Length: 291
Image 1 (cartoon, rainbow, N blue to C red):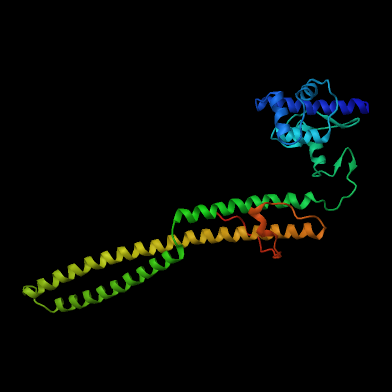
Image 2: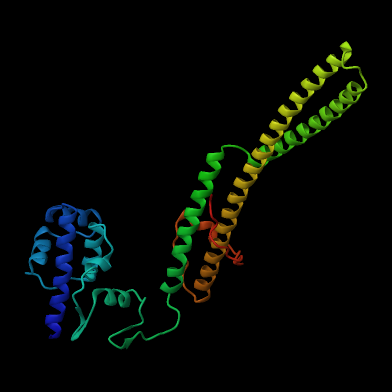
């Protein structure tokens, strides 16, 4: 294919993607033109119509960007028919899959049609590709922590201490009651079974056994509560360590970006705290399992 034919074919691909996406969103050509104007990149309805119908055979990169924003889609999805298995002539006389061209276009693939990128070193996108999955892990980890804390709805450390204190008090009460029961049993063993006092001692022993059983059940309940709270706290602490480790990885990537003289990426206010000077990386644990 000639250079002119190649350029027109690529433009036709973009036109088809624009038309398909516009129809998917149930937008008219006028609505698309209005949205471009709202974004500060005005484009006449007639221009869009001529472009989609093939009467206009060229398109500027600025127009692709404006159309992509108006159609709420990444520009790369307009430039390459991702999802299609048909080869695309991305360079004159060179046909590859749309996926292969998109990887080359974004720098994820260093070779296409045996044409390497000029610099095979680190590119600005490389650390960013490693950084963004870590940010998503941090965000989801914090959401899990918040959800767990809200589900508990209390001061876990204080409640654990409270449950442990109650368990200790109940244990002491049980020991005291056991001592009293032992004394009652010893006195009763020395009495005549027919004596009135024997019956009194038997009744006292029965009452003490009931108390001991009640205190023992309450102690088990307090112990189980303490264990349950400590288990939940351990889950939260494990997730906190996981998030901290991910933050360490992000700081390492930020340091890598700065070492190459590149500008800090704009991660928004949510992650602005990561741009301090603490660039040490904790050992990254496996993601904790939340039971």
